[in-house]
Image (cartoon, rainbow, N blue to C red; front, side):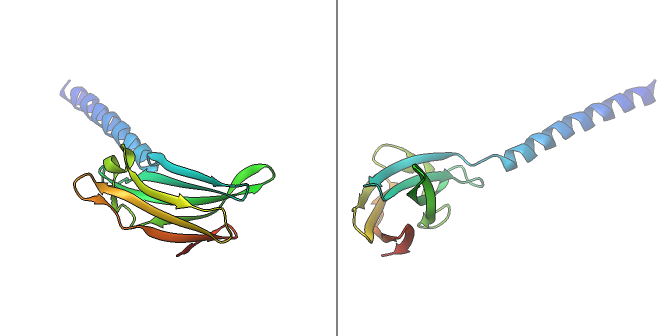
Length: 142
């Protein structure tokens, strides 16, 4: 009887731990939480977006992705992307809250100047503006 109880308890533990391990592996492969925080369409040439990506390692950290799209066959297709600032160098909650975008300016010229300034925290304020240039669908430091 004792062996049977031990065997049942062991099987239950293996089942529980196996399920927990499967959940953990699914969480590791899940896509990060994202939120678009700004977007601009420059005529029919370019569409530019800023997207916050929540860190997988730190729930309070985030990265910001700047993406450029060009028209192709009547649809917007991504032509380039860069990370604004450092990877996981922003705070998720200020970045996705009210007033997160301090400056997001663009112009419909070729090359197209682009300036980005984001809220670091409400007490610190906005980041220094970062300047880019979009030329032929590619992003360059400005």
